[in-house]
Image (cartoon, rainbow, N blue to C red; front, side):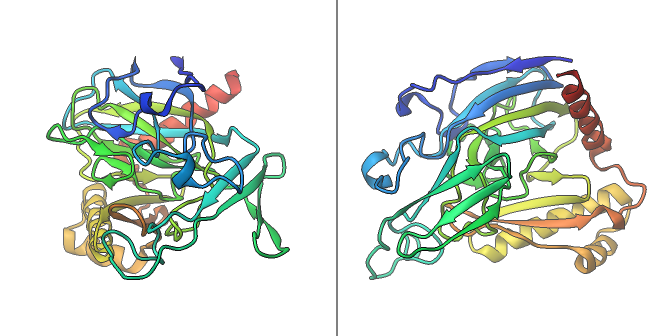
Length: 340
């Protein structure tokens, strides 16, 4: 089993980190099938740590959402699909932070939804993370109120270099992946990403201790993560938009504005994927998906919004999506844990 550990410099200045998909020099080269152990900084690169910290005061807006990577995947080329299986995602810190950011979020005026209202007050909440009890503790700022929420670690950003030589901000989602902010990106999930350039140039980051669907205020419970992923390759199989698979669902994504276009992309991709896997006609697959799909909102705050579409595997009996690679990577993950 090929293991690779990539460590970050915790004292690196923000300007030296990776904040794009595409346009960055690979930090390492890995072979398909590699078990990659690494960690990711939180979206503020550790600059926000207390309720007195304000993003606008302690962070440079050019340096938000640092990524770990990119990793050059040997043998990956355009027309292939990268399969990234999340073995584990665990908070590196005992706390996480969330904030309101001026003119950012789904319930305030923004640069693209312009209004004459003042910005919401900038505030910071600090959440205690209890890893033993698997809890995240919310505390109100303006009253005595607290409640425990389930710890549900995930990665907001997972992606590869875009096509056509584009360089895209790590704040943006698209067909390359990027800042999709879907809570579905948990441990036990395999993410499929279409390869656009030689080596794929895979990166990920933006760890969330938990996040509600939609990421309504624009900021989840942000924290650094220790993560283990298996990076593998499906040769000669394209993947037009990011897909996910867990033990119970196949999931498609779409990122666009307005939100209904993101919905349409995710739904149409699920119809096409279902047709390809089952041999059904597109219209028969359309009918099946229409009656069985779930449609969680991923984010309604980023430069493009992201929707997901989930189909239970129970309506796909005997089907092994993407050639059965998710099940194989689950077995590899179990063997890796047993060997450790």
